[in-house]
Amino acid sequence: MATASVRHRRRVRLHLHRLTVPPPSLSALLDRLARGFGSETVGSLLGRLGSRSFGPVLALCALFAILPTGAIPGISAVPGLVALLAAGQLALGRPCLALPRRLSAIDVAPETVAGLVRRVRPTARFLDPVLKPRLLILTERPWSRLVAGVAAMTAVSMTALALVPFAALPPGAVLLLIGLGLTTRDGVVVAAGLATAIGWFAALAGLAAASVF
Image 1 (cartoon, rainbow, N blue to C red):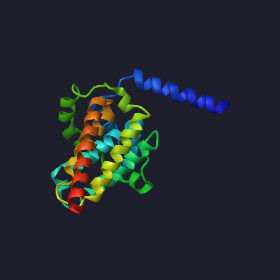
Image 2 (cartoon, rainbow, N blue to C red):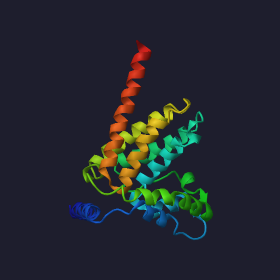
Image 3 (cartoon, rainbow, N blue to C red):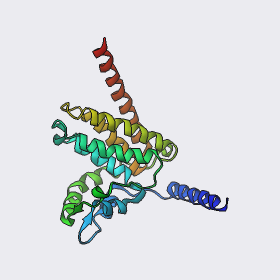
């Protein structure tokens, strides 16, 4: 009983901390990624983001699918599976993203991280004033787990339609909005992602019904 009480108090303190301390901006997250020295791995980079790793991973998977490379048949299956892994863990209530050991151990050259941060930073600075904490109910439990469930279903659809050219664009938009919203605790952006997801699944249902009848 005492152990359960201690755990409950820790969860309450963590929840209050998340509500009172503003999340880092996109620029601050990039600075955190670029802070390393020497060789890096995928796991160590995610470790710097901690509990904030889910949103950035979803957003990166979405960008990979939306970019021209995602139009190549089959390519979008890779970000779709990674997004499914991230969204699934968040939906199950995991505090931090855990990748398979082989994937987590992949080496990442420091200059690769620095180059990525340098290219993304102008966009992050542009979005920083736009993305801000609001409608927090959608970015905190239990609603964030439901949002993650929607993201997981979206990732499944992205993977299933990987062989269809440009089919990754709508689910990619959903994952991008949800990922950015969770990263910055912007519930309005998350809501936009949910609305886009409803439209996407409605379109899939319509296509399925048309093919049957």
